[in-house]
Length: 73
Image 1 (tube, rainbow, N blue to C red):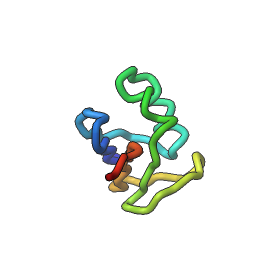
Image 2 (cartoon, rainbow, N blue to C red; image 1 turned 90 degrees about the vertical axis):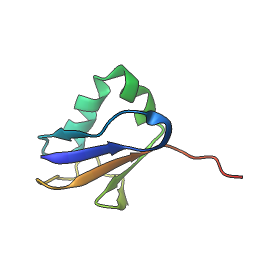
Image 3 (tube, helix red, strand yellow; image 1 turned 180 degrees about the vertical axis):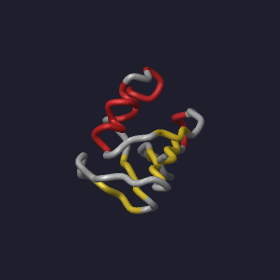
Image 4 (cartoon, helix red, strand yellow; image 1 turned 45 degrees about the vertical axis):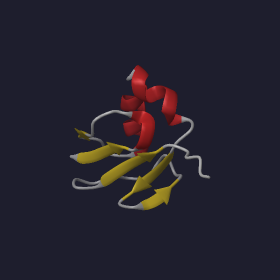
């Protein structure tokens, strides 16, 4: 199981999902209307490191954070 956390204004509780790679995770998250609108805007961190490769393999115990863009002042 992979733990998925949604930070900032996304406002969705964390999930635990059985997925093999980021592509599969994206497919699952895209089915949720509340989450799908954020996916194109957000960065993704795997165990606290930003990743970009949709084919990145995931293993049980990994932590994914969906990071929305932020505005600073």
